Structure formats: C-alpha cells, structure tokens
Amino acid sequence: MNHATESHPTRTGTFILVWCALLALTGITVAVADLHFGYASVLIALIIASFKAALVLDYFMHLKYEERLFKIMLLVAFATLAVVIGLTFLDTAFR
Amino acid sequence: MSHPSAIEAGHHTDYTGAKIGMWLFLFTELLLFGGLFLLYAVFRSKNADAFHEAAAHLDIMLGTFNTLILLTSSLTVVLSLEAARAGNRRRALILLTATIAMGFFFLVNKFFEWGAKIDHGIYPGSPDLLSMEKGEALFYSLYYAMTGLHGLHVVAGMAILAWMIRPLLRSSQTGPQAYVGLENGALYWHFVDIIWIFLFPLFYLIS
Image (tube, rainbow over all chains, first blue to last red; front, side, top):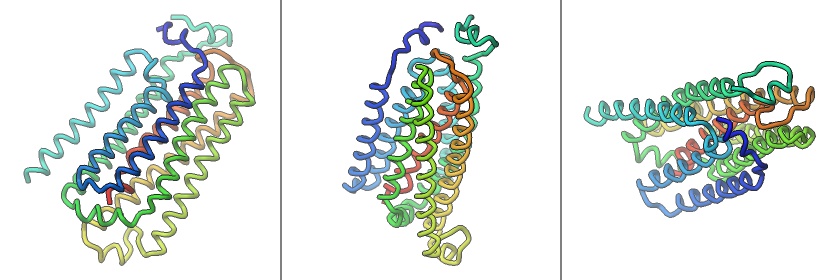
C-alpha cells in the first residue's frame, strides 16, 4: 500500500485542470439541454453527469490513487443500487 | 504495516481504517439518495410529459450558478487539504473557510429559489400543488424532498468542515496521512457535490 502514499507530489495543477473540466462539462450539459433532443436529452445529461462524478471520485476523492479495496467497495455499493433499481423497474414496467 | 507520520505524532492511528469507515458511511448515504433517485425514475417514466412541463418552471440560471459554486468549493477543500499536508496551515485555513462560505452561498441561493416557488403557491401540500396534474405535483414534491435532503447535507458538511478548523489551529502535522479528519470531511463534501451533479440535470435541464 505504500506505493500509493509515496507518489504524493503537489497535485495543485491536476486539481485545477479537473475543476476546469468540471466547469466545461457543466457548460456543455446546459448548452445541450437547449438543443431539445427530446427524451434522449435526459440520457445525454446523465452520461455527462456520470463523467463529472467520475472526475470528482477519481481525483478530488483520491480514488484513482487508493488501494484496490476501496474500488471494490464502491463497485459493490453501485452494484447493489443497480440491482435495486433494476428489480423495481422489472416490477413497474410490466404492471 | 507502519505509518511513519503516525509514529512521529506519537500516537497510534489507523489511517486506512479511518478512511474505510468514511467510505462505508458514504455508501449508506448513496443508498439513501439512491432510493429517492429510484422514486424519481419510476415516477418520471410514468409521467414523462408532466415532468418536462414542470421542470420548465425551474430557474436554470440559479441552478447552474449553484452547480458552479459547489464544484468550486470541492476544488478549494481539496487544495486546503493539500496545503495542510504541505505544512502551510494559513493557506489551508483560508481555503477551508472559503469552502464553508461557498456552502453558505449555495444555501442562500436555495433560499431565494425556494422562496420564489413558495410565493407562487408551490410548496408541499399547498392548494395550488394539489390542484395540479398528478405528474407535476409529484415532480415538485420530489424537488422539495431531494433538494431539501441535499440542503441538509450541505449544512452537515459545513458543520463537519468547520469542526476541522480546530486541528488546523492546534497542531502542525505534515505528510500524506496528516489531517485524516479533514480528508474525511472533504470526502463527505465531495459526496454532497456528486449528489448535486445528478440533481441538477434531473430537475433543471429536462424541460
């Protein structure tokens, strides 16, 4: 685990770049919403939001440099949520 | 495993354990919000047109502005932690205070946004809301429930970060594992940011 803590130079530049990317993605998602893609616009908005969340998770929350255990835990949490959502839609969609 | 910084500080700390605890807590929070997102998804799939109609009445400018505030506050808190670990406590304190201030501005915007909606007679249980089409009433109910719960999390995040001013004032620690409390507080703050990243398009941008 020590390799993760050794490579700890100042990441100020990286953080500011990530922040710029997040602002740009926010601009894109607002601009795309104006284009009226109909119901596909929700899908596009969610994909952009997922990109933004991934950037925050990976860099701001440090997950990219964390041990594998953290990533597995996050995967289990997301999988649980996905199963709950999937099962609910199996019910409501065919009612 | 040995942690040099913990030994230097003269007391035993489990750095990885502290962070795993925080992440586990964040997963329970994820499932809490996940339930509400699920509710939103099911109701939206059944009332798509009404949701689009109702979303048109939300203030995109205000929503975008609040998004920029939260994203920037995530940057300042992560830079604050970095400054603290590099031994620059003054810079860390300034950035941490700026983060808390941005949380406050977010809530001020929310206050005006909710205030405008309430002035128009749209609030949970209001006669106007009850006379609306079912889908629109559901949209606004979810809007209040989800942004309200998120707002409470912003308040909690501000309180946690304010509490983390103390260790910064008290002692100087340096190294990659210093100020784990501040790191965990920042993790919470980023989580609140991520929830907003999804709330923003789902409520403001689907019209």
